[in-house]
Image 1 (cartoon, rainbow over the protein chains, first blue to last red):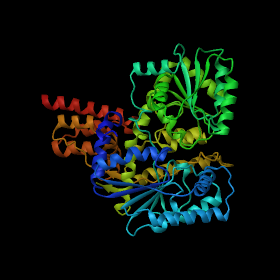
Image 2 (tube, helix red, strand yellow):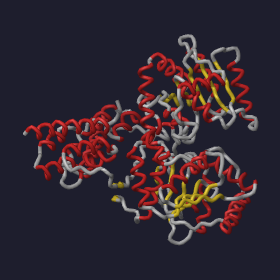
Image 3 (cartoon, chains in turn cyan, brown):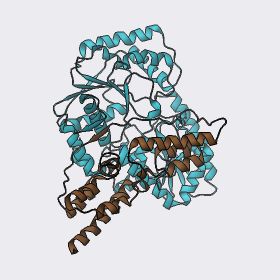
Image 4 (cartoon, rainbow over the protein chains, first blue to last red):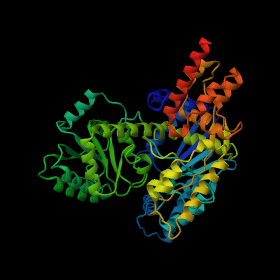
Length: 406
Length: 167
């Protein structure tokens, strides 16, 4: 794992110094994180990088996992989808299974800590066993703006008893009797997906992947999922082909274990068929360096989502200084200010128009990428994320005052 | 060029698309006000005038485009930078984060002594130099990004350092 000092070139020296000063006020405090998985998924990815940094700063982080059978995860998966706005049928037995599983976990998980960050709905019910004197925060990574009311009403009973809740964007907030804090997620600038690569490394990888660079590359990196609108991307590209010299690259997973994904991939291949300037590439999930190189080799990056959680792939692209054209959904407008740090679109035609514009105006496109990178540096790096958590811990420890001088 | 001098102006211009009101909110001369209460009154007055001049059905923004009022908690913390004279002040100013500039220039004007930023106050009380303050007060911090404001202030003090040396 990288040391904190290694983040200075990306985050800035002052960001690192700030972290040290803030952490010194929390020296020796135990910060417990509870979620449902140690690998896979954004939460586990962030915790696995952030917790060693806490240790280096003199804080004692702990990480516990909630355990349950397949039936429990089937129920929490339904919770997750319902909170995201996809209608689910929940029975009284489902809610009872949640209560029973949480009760069993309370017997086994060590919840002793000064501060606890409880991530997402799966472990939310642990609040029943909050130790006296501890400060507990419910960290919600889900966009709750279209949540299904029965699931939210159920969770509300737990969440209301926390000391604070944390959400990723203001529009995700709900009516709660506790304070809600905005802490957006982050990218790790030193992870394989985002670290600096030399031109030679990029060229080598592009050669290995057989992606020609004789024309400007327009890329969308995304699962083959209807909500990422890969067919809309192809339609938009076809509209500009008579006027531009460019190649479109759609990169995603193989979707072998996902029937709907396989169906979308098949439709994408059909739409791309016979068009030599449209490439469809399936990469295994471990292809972080490859994705990094592809983004760096691209002239424009697309994220034409129709629905999105926070959409951190946008920050990953902006961090590489690339002009990004993205759907104005979920957390994307927090990452892109239209025509300043990228382009926000809502339609196929709008996406086509801006691809053409950016190809024809490289200086403007370059400025968008430059501004985007600075916006990510200030707002979406792991160091800022850690700082926000530590400040929240200090706020809760300091008696919840509005002005705090350290 | 970053848009919108304040969040209200940005939202009214880009989301509500009330162009005239948006322009008025953008051009509000925040430097003129010495307290947050005065700034709040100025915004309220502007909105009330807009409503009285535009009776009839009001625009409602689409779901998801609401203005979310957020409360701020302000943390301030010491840095390693401490200035003892003009030259070291310039050095510090080059190295501190822009949030430090925000605290000492923007927020400082809204707490006692009202209307004076921390930098000007320091030069006045330690070196009896009010020229730095006069120069800085002529900069409208709301019309710069924090980075370009930093460069401006550095230039003001560099010029002043040369004058003081030659005096």
